[in-house]
Image 1 (cartoon, protein in one colour):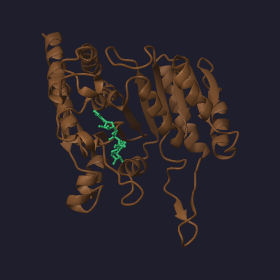
Image 2 (cartoon, protein in one colour):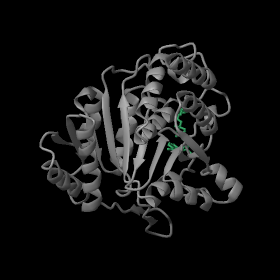
Image 3 (cartoon, protein in one colour):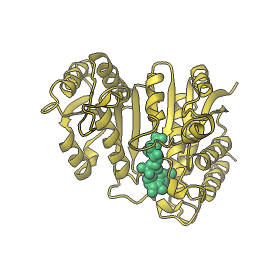
Image 4 (tube, protein in one colour):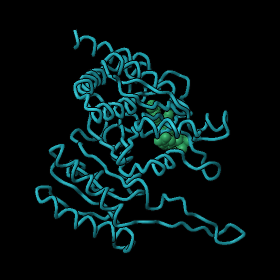
Amino acid sequence: MPTKVVLIPGDGIGAEISQAVQQILKAAGADIEWIPAEAGQKAYEEQGNPLPEKTVELIDQHKLVLKGPLATPVGSGFRSVNVSLRQKFDLFANIRPAKSLPGVDSHFTHVDLVTFRENTQGLYIGQERYVNDEKSHAESIAVVTREASDRIIRAAFEYAVQKGRKKVTLVHKANILKLTTGLFLEVGRDVAKDFPDIEFNDMIVDNCAMQMVLRPEQFDIIVTTNLFGDILSDLASGLVGGLGVTGSANMGKTHAMFEAVHGSAPDIVGRNIANPTALLFSAIMLLEHLEQFEVAERIREAVNKVLINKKVCTPDLGGRGSTQSYADAVCDEIKQKMK
Ligand SMILES: NC(=O)c1ccc[n+]([C@@H]2O[C@H](COP(=O)([O-])OP(=O)(O)OC[C@H]3O[C@@H](n4cnc5c(N)ncnc54)[C@H](O)[C@@H]3O)[C@@H](O)[C@H]2O)c1
């Protein structure tokens, strides 16, 4: 019986890249049945709700999601559906690997780091308000709890043990935000004692941003609070070629959602030039979660070969190809390997 996975193609380029990813997973023999669902700007325009009840029910039932990008209005309008989904299904760990890839131009060649971002708290709890009627003064509340800090930091260490990684770096701003990120650091120091074989260090976020750009190879696993994780994981993507080539997983105790980290790319929508690699890497993380390791590895190997062929890659990778030529080339590689 194939595993049922809810597929939310999302807004903008979402339909194009989801189609390419489905094509590749089918060619590789993934044992998955896709359950289509809607969310985002399109769902809002058509159904008056960016997160329709039907979609929530499907996710609740099937517990696994592959999701394309969802547009979020800036400043006003509806709240981010991404944030709502993470909170609704308690997807507390946002895991984003960033690894140097063959054929992908970047300033570095030996980056291999994974960011663990706390996904449910910090400044992202949505408690913001204007303090006065003139709306000239706004404030926002950040929440950090011992329990939520413990589970994300423990998840980072457990991942290190499972994947044979060596070091966890906790990133904070405890010199200034002494209570919130100070608590996160305190919990981290306690959790680290349970993992004596994994090296542990901590770093202030501004220094970390500089160190990542100067010497990214010093990082193995980074664990941090919501806002810092959001920014640093994008920075990490930039070290290996950008948002078009990094996948991510949002893991909870019962549900998991795998998603591309880039947005809906409204500037290139409908032009068949969107790069599906990020969503494909998220789908590989899904396959690994489903323990379909052979299928995952088959796709990864094919992608590594195709990325060096500029004729078929999308323009963001310096290629002269399209979404379709890239997907077809990955499928061809897979088929050759499976012969
Ligand atoms: N996880 C998500 O769903 C997510 C993440 C970020 C932004 N967004 C939303 O996306 C919308 C647009 O945001 P933005 O413009 O700031 O960021 P964006 O990631 O959509 O685009 C930034 C730049 O990267 C390019 N780009 C992004 N993905 C690409 C891909 N797969 N292939 C080739 N080029 C790609 C775009 O063409 C653009 O030039 C906003 O509504 C924002 O809220 C959603």
